[in-house]
Image 1: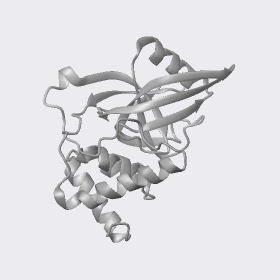
Image 2 (image 1 turned 60 degrees about the vertical axis):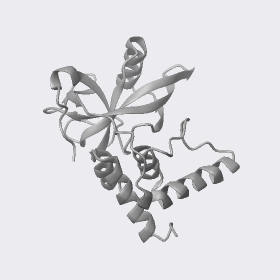
Image 3 (image 1 turned 90 degrees about the horizontal axis):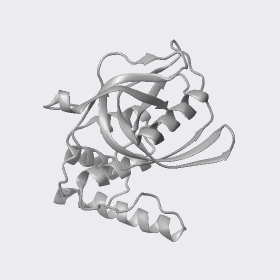
Length: 213
């Protein structure tokens, strides 16, 4: 699954602010958030001021809205989110458009501050190697390209540009966002270090569902 960075001192992310959600964010993925709780409004303001990301972790128990220490459990690995735009359409309500960047794993236990915000020391993880999809997995690439064109024809741009259909990790991640599989399965796929293996598992699932020829 996830392997540690060979240079932990260089890649340490101390006291990373965390945003637990009932979804798995993938590197390169788009995330829209409607923020109204004080702890997350403060988080957004701090990240914008410092031009720093926050960490998105998948909830395994509880609710991200006013969840208490005993009510919330989340995965020990997640993805950093960069705030691209912030729109304050009314007082106390902020719309954030974010992009997933790098993966991380938590080091030790996360703690909940007095204001309710979760923070934890984290270890940044290597980005996917930019390797082309294995030739045997080309049907999954072609099916994703067709899905993109179909969605575009309906006036919807499903993924952030540029599209990197020549990278196994990018193709696998975009499929993971689309597939109707449990969040626990998506979390395991996100944590895989090998992008080719991630795409192979996606390819096999698509083939088993009759999506691929």
